[in-house]
Image 1: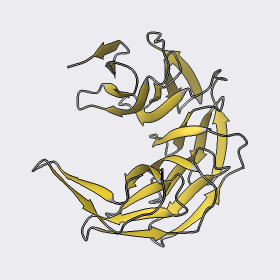
Image 2: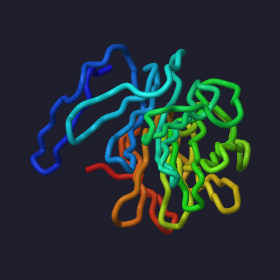
Image 3: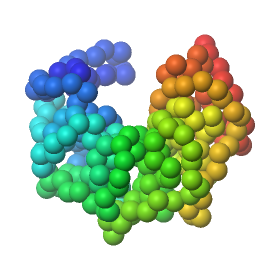
Length: 239
């Protein structure tokens, strides 16, 4: 809902608001860098992609105009230099070309709402989306523009929010309402539920890797951080 981009300087611990003021609410959901040095935000309720130039501190709206709300959640770059957004309520994947400032909808149309929340790349060059209400993981081939639903059928709603790759080549999704972490093997196209069972709703919201090779999930309603050990064990910890 903020009207400007927030810039954080880790060296000084200071922050600043940069770029033009933006109207609307719940505008963007996810940010990623491109090879041109600029940053791009996935449009959720906003009608266009947001481009951020960290050198000049300016912003621009680029690409085609897309109506409707809650369109995309999550964005990542691919080896072809383009960026891709995971469809939340949108029916197709959004492709962004930083070189031309254009966008395109790719792949087959997907039914349903609140489909995916998070997208990450794997070593095979393909992209994978974390399933929220939809029952299977979405696999995107940036080279061909073809998408596929892979892995086991997953029951429940609001299952996962956030996905990242690990040093073992697999991808992992942070459990929102799901009771276990989801592991995706891009080489075999299979999925597995791993680790301890965690009860409760809206537990975690985002996942990333640490320098130690372990993965960490940010607590939303959960009271502790979830650590996924590189050897497959799980820990929850606070300060």
